[in-house]
Length: 358
Ligand code: NAD
Image (cartoon, rainbow, N blue to C red; front, side, top):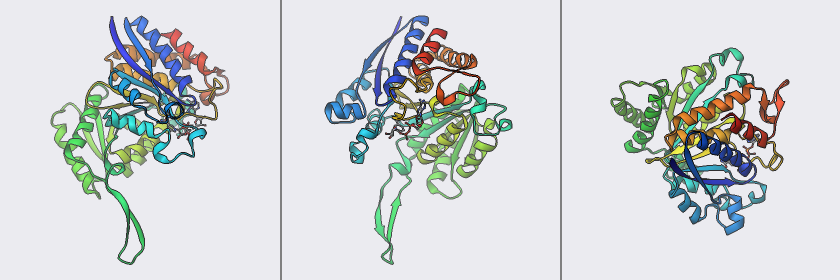
């Protein structure tokens, strides 16, 4: 029997509720696929601040480094909103990504056939479905470049942020994207602004050079303004998208909103090794916390990504995704995705339905 250690960081608000369901589904998967998952919990975010004064305690980072994968819930809430930026629960998220050297953020945007009606796009635009994987560079670019305040020659206040990328930084995230394209539909769109930005011209050169190692992948380059437009005009044309930190931040939100609900969206953050961090895209949703209303599917689908990318259990991951689809097709919905004629279920029941389906 294969044994895996999984660090579970439930966090705040609905984090613990949805994570509990993902863990239950993983236990069902473990039984079916003869895999033993050893879950160890750690603190992150507001609950960690309350317990030990830091959003990311050293022992949490140590636990994650010693694990095969990390499953995170969500952090934050009104209780901690007045703390200064670097002491807020969200600082724990930046800390853990940096601490584990996770430079590639994967956000799949997938419309489940039974949820086509939830997309804000016209039905004819999503009739061919949507299954896009956005790979965003996570630890470089303008969010990490030199920034500051200055004054113009005329004495007016001014500010600057610097977009900087090195060739190895571009190639390592592009490699992740090429590898993912290899096991999907073999198409990769690299998004930049090479008609204006020098950093984008270097990005494009580096991705093109790397593409020589992947002759089976059809690589295209697209300007970010065009990509933003194409995503809402003809989303089915995309398979994998790779792009910089800032463009990825914006495009992954755009791609995800096309799918309907934030409660459905998983994510993975990867580095050089197998260790990855898996978390729903949504936050701690304090408005519905503790009421058995949260949709646990984003967390459950994040756990499926964990099986695929960190634990090498692709078949089990597919099984989990199929279970989600089957339960949705049976008409069961949490409040965020409910439509007339569907059956309303709570967080616990939705989790149990998926686990039973496995
Ligand atoms: P949010 O994602 O928590 O909530 C936005 C809206 O979506 C709310 O109405 C909420 O009820 C709903 N929602 C979110 N997840 C849902 C789910 N699984 N099922 C059903 N409905 C769901 O974003 P917000 O309200 O802007 O932020 C709340 C807190 O979460 C803040 O403290 C913020 O800083 C934090 N946050 C954390 C993360 C993270 O941990 N990765 C991400 C974003 C925001």
